Amino acid sequence: MITERVCCGMTDPEQSKIESIVARMAGAAHKGDLGTIVAEEILKYSVLELQVIGGRLNLEIERLPANYRHKIRSYFRDQIFGAHHLLLSRYRSGIFLKCSDPLRDPELFLSYCQMIPDGCMAWDEDTWKNPEIWSPKHRLFYYLIAAYTMFVEDLPGHPVGMPFPGGQVVEKQGEEYYCPIRDKEKDVFFSICNFCPARQTD
Image 1 (tube, rainbow, N blue to C red):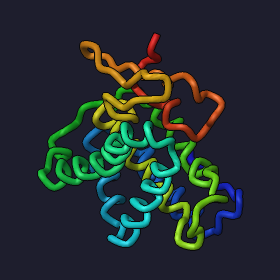
Image 2: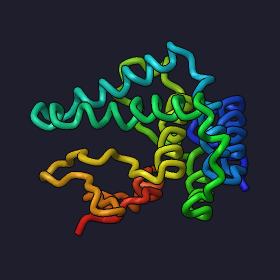
Image 3: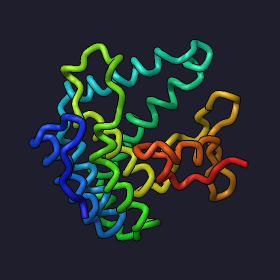
Image 4: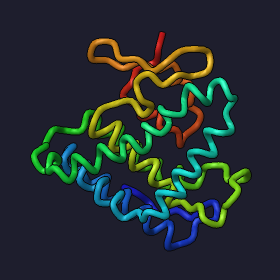
């Protein structure tokens, strides 16, 4: 059950809206149901809101060292907006209406849902140049997209091929996915890595 919280200055309307969306997600009966719910929530974001999310993503990329920034830029964009495009394409084609496949790990999915409201308030906004146009709703977008990727498509939260400092990348070996940071963020409660279907790279 998603319980109500008041934390980190989240206003009552923001809190209630996010918890209502998350409760709806948590009630998904199967993958098709979850895909439909996530797509319907994503479609509520305006063009301006998507531009703000894209601007924030670009800012985070530009802060990275130049040699790494060049390598990772397309993977970050694919993680967010590539998945966004695929989600809406599948929704509009009616694929989710025909899918009743079970969620791969219902208990893990519920844990993911329970994390989201507090996760939406845990990001550091001190260096964001326009804090007045950035809200928990924008952070929720990130978690909605990750829910689709990890629990509907059963794909890693970070795309295959995505490089990390040190030279390792997210890989697919047979039917399994491997990520060099899968088990590295256990102390970061709001990290999607804790819910990812990938295995830790040896």
